[in-house]
Image 1 (cartoon, rainbow, N blue to C red):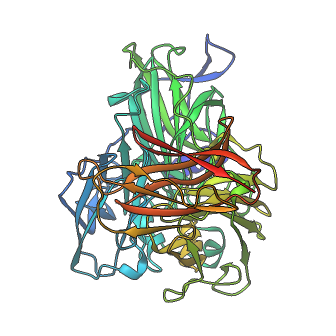
Image 2 (tube, rainbow, N blue to C red):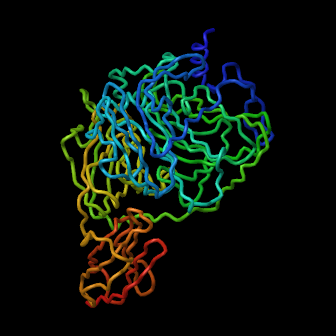
Length: 583
């Protein structure tokens, strides 16, 4: 029997794809679960090289060996598939000298990174063939697992499918929770391809694939087919990136072992949450801790995608069972890591402070372009709405179709508020996010506030065929309402000035100064009002600001008379003023 026919037969039977010969099962002593015996099949997991900050990224057609002894034509950066991994510390400045050696335009979108408009990789900022561009910006956000990929107009899906993507990992020494590190901190980029195309990455979507997205029937991890990783009987940290064009994965271990979800798109959660499965859509990231200590040496367990019901055409449809990567337990070395009881608290937005609600209806029509948002398709030159900086908004996303839509926003991290009105959310929804899966006929609400940069950004479906088909809108972040910079000069120190007027009724203005520290371009700042009992009454600002002098007005018409305190918090600096509301 040909290898291809065997793999197809195994797939249809719902078995694990990582071994080229029948699996031998036996019961674990840990529990009544099926584990595989280490047999040596498959290919060792590959890891892309690290990118040297300040260096060159050259995008070009390249030939690599994805499957052993077989050449595959890919679109690679510096000849690497996936692209080189960017690993950078929060607060550092990234410098990438990017050269486009393709015969078509390209951009780099830094997915999940909060960057100025000119650095975001918007398709309007295309880098022409045989041209170059320097991406440089200060990394502002929390430590976490991000990634980069193509965002060229009508070419994003093809470029990503053919290999143009890579890890972007942000670290922060302040987040020291004794998590597994080094060889025990493992990034996993998951992408599906097609057995019938081996060894090629053929990309030629038809009408059906533009409807559902370009789906495969076998999985590559870090560009490795039939991947396995040798592990120790200890705790590991796995960083999962769904780098697929359209496939949604239902992640679980083959023996249904529990794991701890510790991070979402924008970094660590409040605390680990134990689970046995999770949904991961294109563009989403999740970090989990998994302990192999209860397995015996020479046992294996597989990370897989479980079957679920959805649309499409066999064998290329959502919900087919897929093997992702096999873990072979080979020794007893300890990672020294642990599962913390909690992480730093996340400051969740208060929905009562929403100043504007926007509604986005996702639809599909019978003629191309098929996919729309509010009955609009993407127009590079059209600005579809304007959002004031610093204003808390609620975005209600209504899926009026029978397909998945992983909705992604540029320039900000948001918080998921509800699904169909239910605020009791799955663990992968809680925390900082930039991509949210909106299920068929579902309504999802997110809270959004742009604290950092103004300019033109994108909101789109991260099913890349849907995006290229036009399921994407432009918006502009404009001058803030309620807080304004009154000086561009850098003050000598942090300072919170006395409010004026004081006493006041019903509104007062509060001025404060923010200075930079050690050449950092922006600093974090919180401006909070408390009542006489110490209870938080209002959050006037929570985000980052460039150095300068600022003013905000607090309208206290809904608050009772009395003494209030306003506190400015910037890093380790705090200052409080006393305010009197006299009605």
